[in-house]
Length: 159
Image (tube, rainbow, N blue to C red; front, side, top):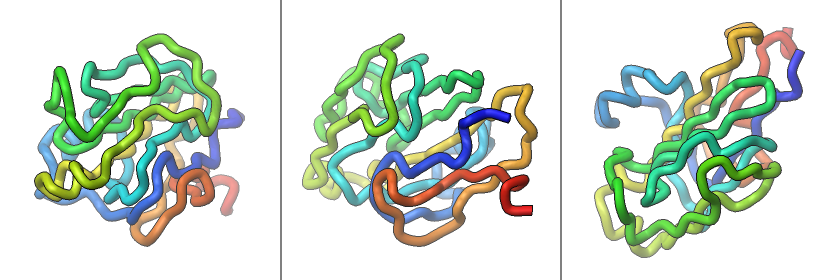
């Protein structure tokens, strides 16, 4: 078994379920399964040690690869701010090794709150490695704290 689980929250805020108001690519789960987070804090951090597989120029799309080959995709808003996002400051680059708790993005909450409410929602999507059982679950709703709250856990541990 991998040391992937449990996975801590990459940001503080409130978890909510995916719905038809969120962009179709997230609703269709092509990047994996997981919850949405209405971000309340000023940082998004790495929830585990990983390599940054990909990050958009604006920072609104980040893919982290765990040593187990599991991938966590973080998409802030609709994921279509390709060049710049005035509320985001990237702290990492593609292919960079990060440790749990390293800052990936700094957020300007004033700018985020002034935009469309969907733009401050973070999709946290997990694709477990093919060698891992697809038996994880995620927290469905409620307040969470950066790195203190568990958002993904292995169902086998709770059996």
